[in-house]
Amino acid sequence: IGINVAYLIGDWIDVAFFGDIGFFLQHKEKLAAFPGLKVCCHPQIDKYNWVKYLARDASKCRGISDNPKTVCWNHNSGSAAISMAAHAGAKRIILLGFDMRLATTSMQHWHNLYGRGQINNPKTVMKLPFQRHLRGFPEIAKDARRRGVEILNLSPDSAITDFRKVTLADVL
Image (cartoon, rainbow, N blue to C red; front, side, top):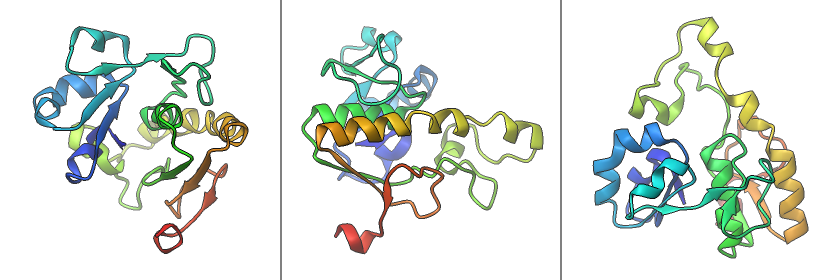
């Protein structure tokens, strides 16, 4: 599952998952050409029949949804995709690029591909969503253990501390 622009990485990405309608509108043409499954958890997507809509779980905003027809939003697309992967039967989920922090160049990594690139203003840094995004991971970890799903973090400098950090050699 590639989150947001990660579907552009290569043809080995089978699913493009996103939760932001603004991202979708900006990438609609490229996403339409993407041969894999397109999945979104934003309610405005349901008018596009070529994108699979998975509702956000109204009863549980953090963790992994117990309802296979919904995802827990967790305030970010990557975390929401974990619900989808668990519902699809994944017993091992490897997080790649889930760093939840700025790069040393003050770039928001892939975000420069959709208009939110370099952060030069200290006030802007304070508004970044990373702290909000991190709040869902303790619940995700708890729900994953309950379901027998192993989640590994392949991002060595990740701010996420709820999953074991591993190297590429470890998972290969």
